[in-house]
Length: 429
Image (tube, rainbow, N blue to C red; front, top):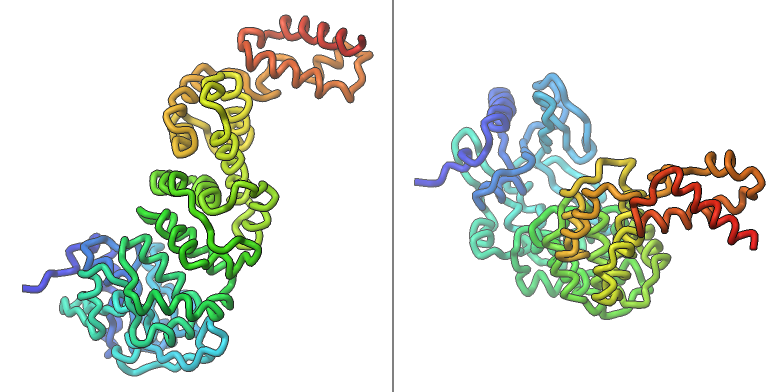
């Protein structure tokens, strides 16, 4: 008896899918669940999203549902919205010629499911599933390749990769997120079609990297990109080959998924040479079109990694250094975006190892770390030392900050006022 793939679909989604399938079939059309969601179901996983394919044209689909968005109507795709959840419904397609290596020159609506499945990238993604009959359509041995954990193109891999330069990057990403192996002929085609891959947009490339970060083995994506010399397609000044620091890359798989900046920092520190500056890294990240926030976060963590990797073990126990060089920048950088908790600090373990426990201890003592944490500020200096040039305020306040970071008990207004007088006296001398 065949396995009922519907058992892996949560009831909320299953009810929505039944509504869509029933509406289309009731109007005389075919409708199948297709692509990655079917692959996931075959693997026993619960899909994160569900795409459907049909022989109904978009205009016909739109007549059957109350809320439909024209998400990619030129390619036959509309989005049906049920209870605020999106379901992409795409008309059977035949892609005609790819002259730019990115998208078909034009799309023709197909008449059969077979035509539609034939145009897809990999065998594992060319599965279709009829929810109403529990029929699984597999015309390209996708189940076999899923069972063997193999990524294989449908038909000639050079031809398929020449149609769309993103497909080789997707192959690497699937190898990473699914823990699959790319079969040799498909893997060889990655090198032979680099001139096509070069045509894809930088946004599409970096999006594949970010998608790999969501999987269990993002380190494998970075390793494969390095092995295949893919980074150099988009960043020509990078050395070839890249020499991967495995002890750093291994930490990527243990990094929290919500710290994209840390994932980026570990990735690039692992593949870039030791002479890479923060300015060099910023140029790379901007070239690859990462968001401004991800770039800022990455640069902070990258600087942390450089410092920590080059710090003597004895210095790593210095509480003042831990506060000044690491905790203070973390607080300054993140405090406006979300609360910094011990749980957040523990997420920095890929950089600091077991020292994160010491960071947590220090943090829970609520030490003064920034100028804003001090009981004395620039206004107090102006009141008490009217003759002090304002250009010297920063110097005095930073000396006070160093003092209270060394000795938190000194963070009292009267004590800081006394220390200010002493600092100013020495300044005048």
